[in-house]
Length: 370
Ligand SMILES: NC(=O)c1ccc[n+]([C@@H]2O[C@H](COP(=O)([O-])OP(=O)(O)OC[C@H]3O[C@@H](n4cnc5c(N)ncnc54)[C@H](O)[C@@H]3O)[C@@H](O)[C@H]2O)c1
Image (tube, rainbow, N blue to C red; front, side, top):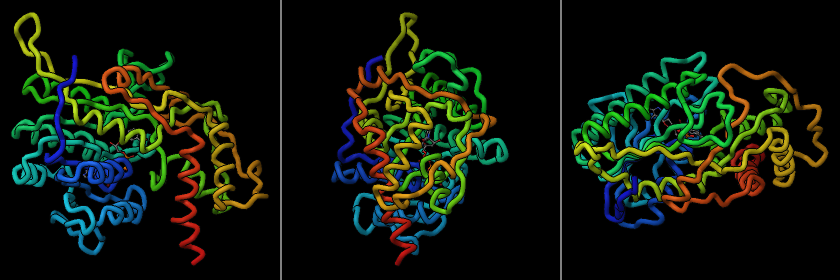
């Protein structure tokens, strides 16, 4: 199904998860490139990882911590088109009041409880944010005229898929974590709402997104924290893991391209509406072995001055078995995104980790020294 164009200039856009890693970077890019766009950010700023990082990202967007209050709009002092709400997408009344007030043209749902390992011990958070929260967003889209709902799915829906690269045609009926199951559910819910109510929806299966001010629960960031504290890092499946890393700027480029082109509403041969529904993989397309990735990371951490030249990396590595919920490989076939949107990731893993290491050095190391 070929997508139809949306001119997002002058439009009103909701970004949920706006204090999160991908959300904050998306808002930054939108306010930079589309001067007359109005963006409403919504995020409950939960403490799944240190909230300082979320407030830091918001401050970069001109929203200061002391001006943020529950359920209230906070103005940005540097991005005139940006307004931030602290609130929960699982709060149906709040979500519908925000939709009533702003009449969104495009909605990008990035708010979710992320993380595979955390879902093993904390299932409630996933049902609340990823199931009830996403349902509230769909319901709000149903009762308002939204031209396009773009939402975050995940490579985790592929579970232990043995066939590589992962294609959107592959069977994804066997999730190996509750996180993955909620993401797959989002795709099913979205299909149903597209079919029943004609809401154009596009789900993006993100593959291991990384970069400056990223998520501390992810390997590159967690490893760095541990190495700096002189702790050992655990390398799962004895290093026999491959991850399709995608640099944040590439992800944002892909999301913006997708936002602007919604799947078309068409009639099938039976005269009934076909769902204006699409799913894409969005990944780097070049999976890297975990040990090679750690090697590049350690070189860049030394270059950026985060760790000393003579750091004994070998003494800080521990090869351990596979963890529950984890998968050995992720590898995106992103041909469809290239075909329909011209998306080609540009940033190499070394360049991306270099930018992360430099950011880490300025954010953590400089602060602790001075
Ligand atoms: N980063 C990745 O590698 C990756 C990979 C696959 C999928 N994803 C998905 O992409 C999206 C964004 O991920 P991210 O890496 O930016 O994660 P993130 O945790 O940094 O951002 C998510 C944000 O959503 C907020 N949030 C969570 N539950 C909420 C709720 N109920 N109401 C309002 N806000 C809520 C959190 O406070 C957080 O700021 C998520 O849906 C995630 O599942 C990310």
